[in-house]
Length: 293
Image (tube, rainbow, N blue to C red):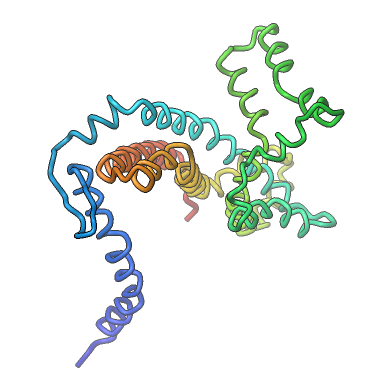
């Protein structure tokens, strides 16, 4: 006789079976093939694919011979290190604002999520800076946009004695406003959903005790959404590595130059870099995450 626990286990397996089949066919097998290709010289002709094992030669070429891979990889990592904190902080700030009661709140939420919808279609193929470049012309609008740049801010802060690294980070944030806003839609929704699950009794009790809004944020809101900070950091790191110059280089090496071995080696170096960054960031943030019981 089949027990209730056994029936649950069977139906659970049936439930995950479509995902398991898709994982094996569309992820695991290509992953293993790419690993094999990264250690091989791959040639294709009318008769099929021929794989000749050459050891670590593709990895040596990617790291020490190819003039573009290292530069693009370092630039991608630097962009990620700059963008991820800014996107997470901006998303939390906007989520707190959108959680307030005001007229047009639904429209405001839709506006911040609109870039995510647009990026899922044909508009995703447009350059993110095309609008700024179109405005930045030799007319009044172009001169106005150019005047909003951060060069003057950088000069003023440096003259005031502010640390140069901090100044460069802030001015970089100003220059990346469009990019930060356009990549914050999903993170805002995640934070907003988490904030709405916080019991209003906590805020009422804090108000009775005389806590200000600032204190309520740091003592209630921030600790309660700290698990979502970890979620959003992981999501933003993965999202930032999904489309950049390194990905384009890997794709062109394999699909344009038909050097599948070198392309696979680049992809595995890139994958290990992303995995390492995710592991380090997850470990550091998880140490400070508050889980309400």
